[in-house]
Image (cartoon, rainbow, N blue to C red; front, side, top):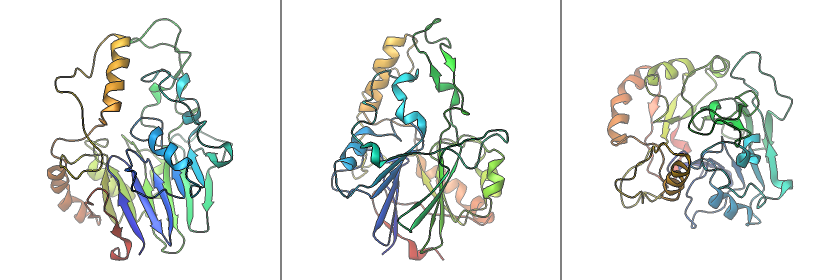
Length: 306
């Protein structure tokens, strides 16, 4: 059976003809089998989960990790806890692939690196620059003035673009768009309009543009991601201390609080995600897109997509 699984957060997995591809793995339980391939959209903790990736890399089944360049330089950026990550030494260099956008955010952006890749004759991947927060790519973090004022030099999305993935399954003919975090439309979406069968929609990111994005991309199905259901069987735990001030003004406290949030598995989510999704269902259907609300951690049979 060919399946798609939402693992909670932005984590999605395709299992087609026994070849598994996971994007933005986060908090993946130990009983979930290691994918053959993993891809990361950007370095935020809930997309670039060192624990999950390290487990994958230690398994001989794992073949390749696809990342944007920023994931190899995360400790050089002013965001948000400098020195927190062990970089990617735990993934052999032979199993790392750095990619750049094929579909660029700005028409004048150009990249000389890899923009397309074929995986095992089953998955064909093209990249698109989603660039949620280019302002976070600040290099030289020790220079004055200190945080919270801007410090260092903005590298910008043109140097360190986030990656969305346009994934086509050769055997099924289905194309999936996994944008990771994405906050706005841009011209490159016109280039992929009508190509998308399944859009993984980041619920907390595209506020105010929920209908216009669907009108532009015209996906047949929408699988929402980047939200949480507060139930005992949700696969990603939530242990954020009550009363925590998530927005302190001092740099040291900010770093400490962010580490607590990361370790407590916090990520942005509406309080009533399921209710919000239902409010969009009819409007999306009028635009030709069927909403598929998956139960986190439970595979969905792709043969149900007609």
